[in-house]
Image (cartoon, rainbow, N blue to C red; front, side, top):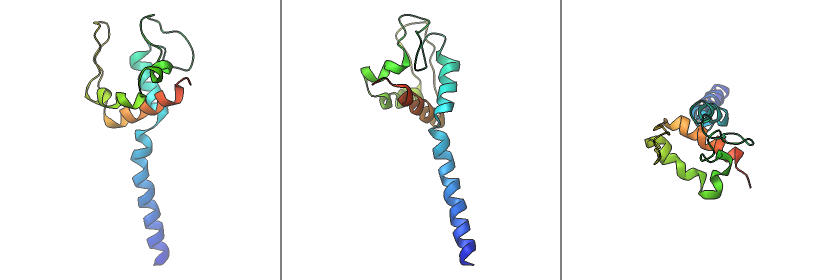
Amino acid sequence: MKIVAIMLAAVLGLAALGPAAAASDPKRGEMLLSRDCARCHAVGRAGESPQKEAPAFRTLGKRYPVESLEEALGEGIMSGHPDMPELKYDADDVGGIIAYLKSVQQP
């Protein structure tokens, strides 16, 4: 009986970690940014932005903490220029985007 209780606790513990791990999956964030943003921005560790006015995402941390984008990404990020569409992501996607952005920041 004790072994069953331990196994059940382990399974429940892993299940609880599942959504949190998915929520901060940098691969998911990379895919979303590549799909939605790469038309204008350099989203990786290298390369130039296709639109010269669009900042490379690897330099965002030099302007402000990347974590500060969480709210804007979840509520709908907008820009002052007409070429950028409004983008809105769910909480899991926001976690993945932030994790990816942190992984590519230049020192």
